[in-house]
Image (cartoon, rainbow, N blue to C red; front, side):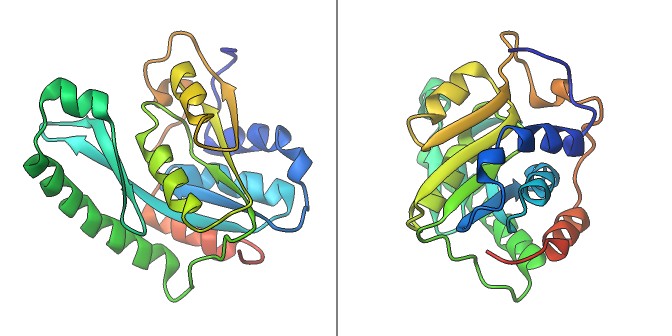
Length: 217
């Protein structure tokens, strides 16, 4: 279950695609990459499966002063998911949640405009949606993504990631229709430890990947 680290996100996406070959060239399948780091992984999956690629912008709500710690996440369409264990454990009030959500909401809108341009949101009704990120730690961003996608009446939601904390992968199984997690290391500390190259994905790389993808959702 531990396995080797991935060389980079492209390598991770290629390996992940091999676990998803049941969806290869199937009609009504679309791959959504979570911006930003999930998009290079998703691009490899979509290319191997021969299905459309699109992007979903989700923003983590970091605890003030401890931005790496997620108290929740937001996604397009007004979706907000809170990590109650963090919120309650740290005694975080609604005021702090609103401040962070407002700030991250502005960044979400900026990135959505940048990545999508004039392209409409994909129609996910009745589709099999494979939602991809580069890994799962607390799972807050993926839970927000699943909630946002569920509102758009897909036929099926498949969460697919190269690596994730075992408990998080198991918890998501109750929210998605299927979860594919290649590595579930017993000693999980951070997603980045499972990549030899975990360089930050840029806005330009996301926009280019989505613009260069064949077809449309």
